[in-house]
Length: 335
Ligand code: KDG
Image (cartoon, rainbow, N blue to C red):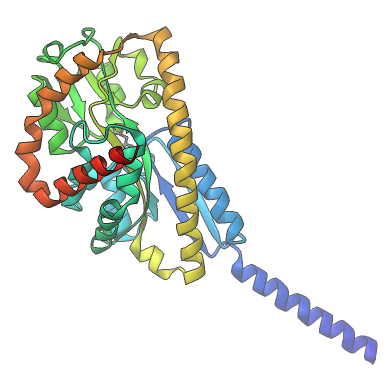
């Protein structure tokens, strides 16, 4: 009798344990999509994020990764986050500007002199305040990751000065300041989603584009572009973001798990991305004609795009532009 009771109790315990474990397993699914491919630093850091979140949530959160615009372009994915049909994405700040106007500030040309100055501003009050503003749009901004300094490529000519850019058809991200900067240099810019870019270059719809070295190499742009120049005309941050609808449904401890992992993966991302950009510039020297500008030549580009500041200062908000510039100066002074 006693044996029978013990057996029934053990069975009941087993059932309870199985049920509880089952109910914790994979309760939430994060589908995360990006435009770059699975060799990018962005994807590698998402893999790192996935590992952290799945381990620390004991499998309660499953993270599925989609690269190469499989879930859509940056704008479409942000809209999906708003609707709650996709949970996570990581666009450049440029296509975020139509959602939160203040994000325009980071795409001003030659704003950040160094990676570290960018980190200082993005991780500081101005950057964090802009992330917060995404919440009114149904999106939670988790952390700034890094796309990096953008460099020009084209299939027509070696570019050493803004005059060489004259008349080139350049694809830009969907952002008015990127368009304006290339117009100031005399190019013929056209906005386009990232997923359409390779074939547009292949078919000669555009002559060139601009992206960090890692992207130029890993997306095989050198197959359809002969020339590249280290214009470094803009530092492009990424924002790792999650659907507010989804995030609000997570219990507080799991929200914390996601948030902490996003920030840890930010460090992984900045480190990996910087190493990759340096490494792939060297690789590109074997497959493209690489022009490295002297500081004087670079200054000519900087001067050519200066009117963009006056053109957009009011639209962005003069206070915001000035506070970013002040913080950059503050950082430089501490060095
Ligand atoms: O995954 C990020 C891409 O979708 C995109 O933001 C990359 O810099 C980019 C571009 O040129 O569109």
